[in-house]
Amino acid sequence: MSLCDVICKQGASSVAHGHIPYLCFPIFYRSKIPYYHGILLPDHPEFANDVEKKMLDIKNFDSRESDILLCSSMKSGSHWLLEIISMLISGSCDVTKETVLSSNLEYTRLEAFEDRPNPRIIHSHLPLKFLPAKHLEKSYKTVLVMRNPKDRLASYFFSILGKMPGLENLKWSDYFNRIIQEGVPRVYGDWFDYTLEWATELKKNPTNIFPIFYEDLQKNFAVNVKRLGEFLCVERNASFYSEIEHKCSFEYMKKNKADDLVAIDHKGRSTLYRKGQIGDWKNLFTVAQNEQFDELFQRKMSDSKIRFQFE
Image (tube, rainbow, N blue to C red):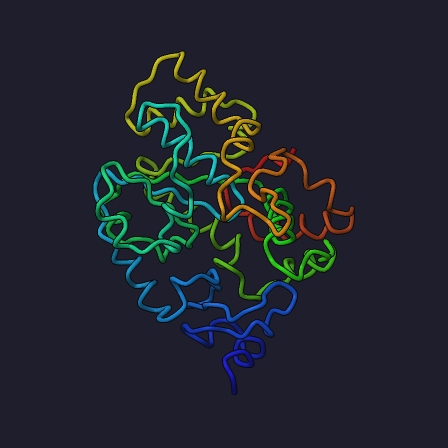
């Protein structure tokens, strides 16, 4: 039985790691997909050869006490937070040359982090259990950015349309029906599992993990960025915070950061900075789809105290 057959017929837990032929997931993928202990991984050269070694190297990453670990599920605002954190710690409101990918553990050769000055911003979309053990065990600073899952799904849908050749005509209904299925391996794993893992960790370690919501930043940027600055132990004056709000506005970043090569679609458009609005999901979800998702959300998140804003 092939790896594809095992995954599709027996479930994700039946295979530890390797590469899955795209035919297992014909709606979304066009190449072999890296796979590791229940989750799919990015189709990237860093995972091209030994998936297990790369993941173990991440787990054993030599974190420094000054490191700032930026964690998020995909399409939750990590590019925005990277910019904000970079400005806070540098004391400069110049747009950083760093990108999320160049700071990302999955996409970057880990040796590249060794020569970077302190404090380093280390980013990852990986579930909690796969993150650098030293960073978590030593309770070094972690910033966790979260976004309501409906807007996140809408954003991810448009990202797929832009960056995956052959999927320009993918229908929202096909995408939604695939995403809503339970027990199907996903890139970086299931969002509910990811979020609930962090909810548990926040209870155990509330001091050195800073949770911040995409929606809170949209509605009250200054207050939340000042709170983040306090968490990072940096002091900035009022004029600095005023400038950072301008430089990190959606319109400014769309104009000045849209040349990130990873964010360019097949038509030369940015897939990172599309709308950035709260409630954009309403333009895609039907009434029936919304009810279906709400039922799943309530069932999965009923015991969680994390509260998301959907509009």
